[in-house]
Length: 166
Length: 166
Image (cartoon, rainbow over all chains, first blue to last red; front, side, top):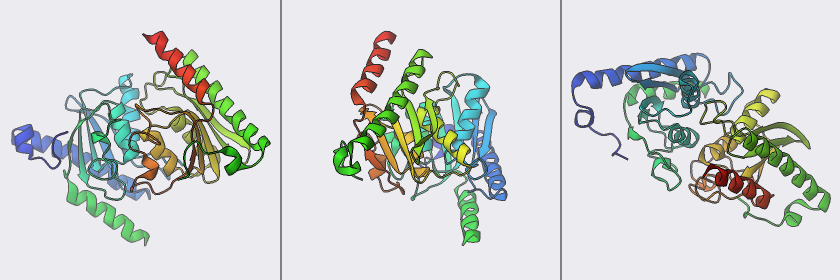
């Protein structure tokens, strides 16, 4: 696994590529905002194949009565259904919050190529926190991982959401 | 977390209770056999509330083009939809194979009360193997866990399935 919070210019080259990646994270943030508007924890996700968004989702655990309805799980299921295959090799996933244990495993099972995420999640994350699934002995596909993309906005959305709940 | 492979007589009392639990595991094994017949990895799961089965499923990852369609995930979604709530407090889950990282986390998020499983899974399990999620710092609900229930039959189903694949 590459080091987290890598220098994008080093890994991905020129400014337009970085701008494109930021724009995919902006779309994930838009999904997070829509989730918040529906009373859900504001996390959003998009999956990209060959420069095109093939799936996008926000959290829907309350709406769907489904504790597994995290943004990443919904986007993975949308993408695999769209493609008609259960593996998303050559696909990249953008999510506003560090994936949890369930989602990190699902990302690995789906063979996602790269994961870009926003805010770290010390309480529930499983990439740089918690079980660090991608570094575990039972992880059989490790995506490249880049954290801290759009971090400030993702974290602000979550803080605002939980402040209102109190 | 109670020790795995506990003595049932110690934890659960009289023989009829043990027999009832075996019959729920038999139903999970039936789901596993049906999954094998459909070409899926033979794992089956049932969820029980107040002595009644409220959800049952076998693996459907190939059928559904969905890497997240493990038996436990499908059964949890079926149960929460049936109940109209995203938490399954007071529900018990029976599964023929040690839950993987994704499913162990989903079981925790769903607030399942007790997990009974069959064969251990050193390659992919996350209860007594791998990330041992229920003992991790980012696990915020720990079910009671009992392994080795119906283990021989569950393991035989898996061995036969993978033998045929070779």
